Length: 102
Image 1: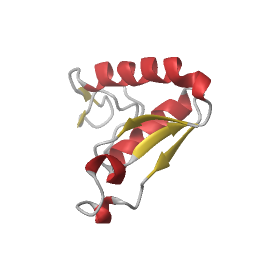
Image 2: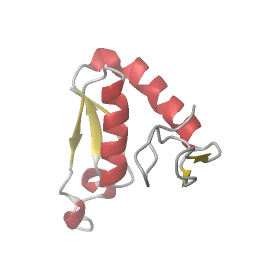
Image 3: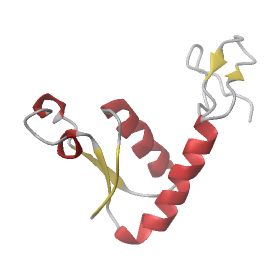
């Protein structure tokens, strides 16, 4: 196993892990319950971490994370079904669950 990156918080860690898993990259989230130790442990040791199960996936995983960051920084997307504005990286509407246009 090899550490790929730290996440800002636990929801982000699971979002990134899901993104990578959908692309066939097996990962694990470590330090999921370590936030309570912040202050007793260094920030790097207490923040959620994404680890690769197979270190050979590192280049592909880093490319996938970069693609995620590019998509997440674009304009929001309106849902055609309910009109709700969604973050750019979402594939389903957060309000009604319908698929979003590409």
